[in-house]
Image 1 (cartoon, rainbow, N blue to C red):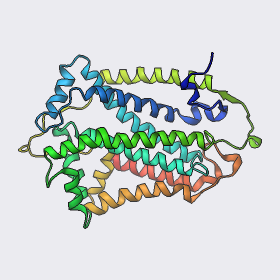
Image 2: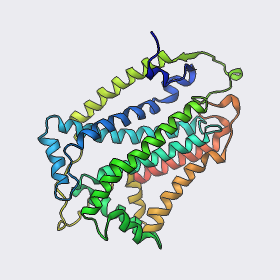
Image 3: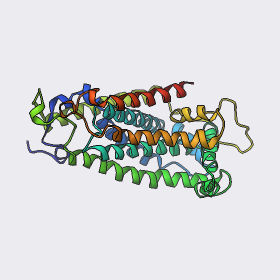
Image 4: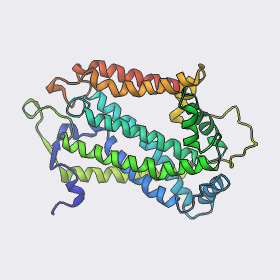
Length: 338
């Protein structure tokens, strides 16, 4: 059988040891699958969503409870978004713990880090589009962090929100950023990221002369494994979406007081915990930017690895990067749990 277009997206062969699930964790392929799921379900949601303060929450409720299979589509979109963020973090950690960030893949690591940031902003903007009482903290406290930036903060806030307070202009701008700006950037950087994987020689592996196992996996077998993985992922996603509905609440009211239980979406809970320490600019802006900067700087700490250790878990020549990675992840996890 002649290779299809989908087959030609893959290299003819890849090193078999580095193609195992125990090495890749399937995170890269799952990220692509979940991204496609989000594009399809998001396009379907656009037929019913009304981006106005008076109509947003009601349109979400109508889609969920009145449109045939609308609740399932919305749940699939919600859980695919959460899953995409989780597998993207797993993918980044896997790259850092296996030395996949070293030259010539350093630039592609930075592209992947940019994709992770875009996914977080997409999740946040999609979260706000519900425009119900459940998103009040994210909208008010989250966007107020921009105001805390010295000098440019108030002006940047007005550009983002369309005024001095959340209102119709804010919802329309979040909708425009979510549907057009962020998704367009995500597609461009995502395609560039996938292209660079091929350009940089595929999955990280030792030079051929230093490989103990020289077996290679043909692309037909790789595609078969990916198809099986997508079928399993689809079944799991449908199962979760069936029994665990996406959050939904009453429409946001200007007169309703914020509740003591108001909190950020799970991926920003660590920022909410930091904000309890005091100054919003330092704890809510500078510290998160420092975390992002440290993640970006990790490939510069150890720019190259011993050739024979490339593509293996926890290479000895990358200990500093591994310790820093685990330290960052553990700190963010503890703050989130708190």
